[in-house]
Amino acid sequence: MRTQLTPDTLSGQQLLLAPEVTLLPDGPASGYAVLITDGVFTEVGPAAELTRRHSRLAVRHLDGQLLMPGFVDAHHHLTQSFGKALAFGEPSEIFRRVWVPLESRLDEESAYLAAKLSALESLRGGFTTVADAGTRAGIDLGAVADATTEAGLRCVLAQVGNDLDPDPRAAAAEAEAHLAHWSGHRLVHASLAVSIPEAASDAVLRRLSALSAEAGAVFQVHVNEHLAAVERSLVACGRRPLEQLHHAGALGPQLLAAHATLLTPRELHLLAETGAAVSYNPVASAWKGNAVAPATAMAAAGIRFGLGTDGTRGDAFRLMDAAEFAQRLAYGLASGDSSCGAGWTWLEHATAGSADAVGLGQVTGRIAAGLAADYLLVDLTVPELRPSHDLTWELVRLANRDQITAVVVEGKLRLWRGWPTEWDGPALVSQAAKAAEKVLAEAEVHRVHPTAAEHRRNGAR
Image (cartoon, rainbow, N blue to C red; front, side):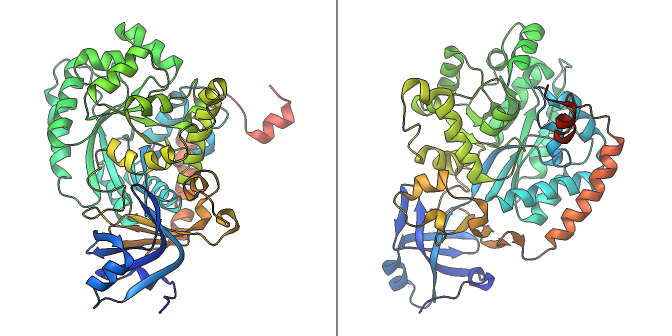
């Protein structure tokens, strides 16, 4: 008996779902089913076997649907959503002129609204998890956690520990409190961070990195993002950013190095040798960077990496497309590499690879028994994906967020056809827009370039 697909199809403590296609760790497969119990994938296997083994359960057939793991955004700034296009067309280091003044004007209410707006955009784009790299707003991080939890988004939540005092005790005490506070939370996973290596003493870098390792958390740092960042580190420390982390004893599997676009051969070796992970942020490179991270080289060297938006746009399918496209332009064309990751590289590193990079490889990122039921249903009956010849490549280059039927986190339906099922999404958008007007009126944001319309009126420059 066929199942009429409605939001109720995905409700219940125990579900036996049989989609047309399931995206397994080894690739797309037809004829599979998944058993979900209390928000966890408890069995994944051939539909005939699961149906026979669980004959008491009604099979919910999902004709024309792909069931795939939710995407994981390995690098985000949730409280920057009020800025958005203010950073477009701007030179590097926009944090000084846009993000610092904007976030400094956020109170807990506006930070909550900004974070929830980001969370909604992320869910609409197919992300079920985001790693927030920390906010410059002087607020209790509970406001950000409340926003993501209420939206239904899994969040790796960083506390920034910038501190140039050589005594690491104060920063360590705050870090330990943050890690302890969120321990055991189902959707919030604590992380520690330093914005850039030279913003903290060697002792603080070493201590926060060690605390992260002990807690099984990630230590997030912006590393080698663009020329200005590299040169600033050389002036301040006499070392490049990644070298400074190595010097301080902060490199290891717990490190999540954001961007890592400008790397020397020695720095690539350091990443591979220490097991550190990278957030490859291709859209950020295109919009405000000097270079593209050598992700295909990282993959060949066994360097762990995920894909991140850097808060640019919350669209996972466009992020994968950008990841492959940037590698082709930056490296593939010159070397005659027509494959550039063969499609699967970007799909894997946007899901399982990203989950591993943010420290949640044993929690989410794959359709596998024992992992959280964080998944998407994607409509396969659209002209973009019919006829289908290579679904993996098609997801990277042709799919888009409009095809996402449902977003599910921990077995609970969070979005149906782009909007929340249990809270008022459009009302949040309206409320956040009003709050943004007030925040931006008070923030001393400085843009180098005018708006696009003003630019056109003034002539190209």
